Length: 223
Image (cartoon, rainbow, N blue to C red; front, side, top):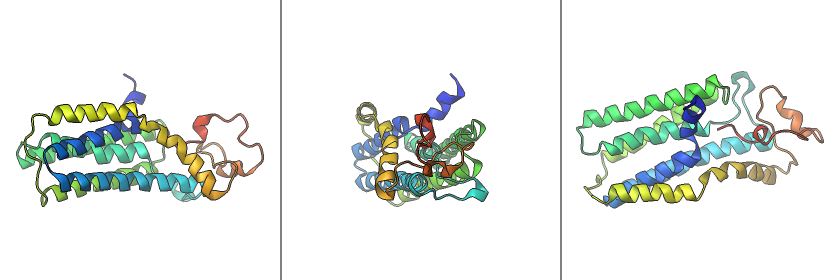
């Protein structure tokens, strides 16, 4: 398995179904409020990542001194979902083991973020900001789980969660990323989006025909 496959763990095609499976796990245990909070936290995070990408694609909003263009969806999703996944899976374990599970998930997210930097999919500032926000989202869920009713034992939870995972996978949530360019162009009124490649001036998209022959990967966020 190549490192690129490891990076793909943070892809929407994997993390969105996983987040959905977590929600169903909580619902099956009748932890309605906790499940609702998790869905809101996850949706808010995805929305924040999407807004940052749209802002760059449509208006070129960035922080050049830091090399920051937009949040990394891969890093945010991994940092938010993986810690919560292990925390929920260790539901019946002592609190210290649940915290260790959360920390393990955070470590995996950091490792994935490091690969994004090594392979130059994102800058350090983009990855660090995404990891911090993702971990904060996961920690918010943990704090809420301490004050809201916990899910009760349910033998069908595993089967229902796995079924939910595969159903969401079949809906191909990865296609969402490709719609961000359309949204950015619609609201900005531009004909072409700003480009993600670092070796090309981000203002090149202003020039007529600047994107002629450009690969599709150059127009979309790398993650």
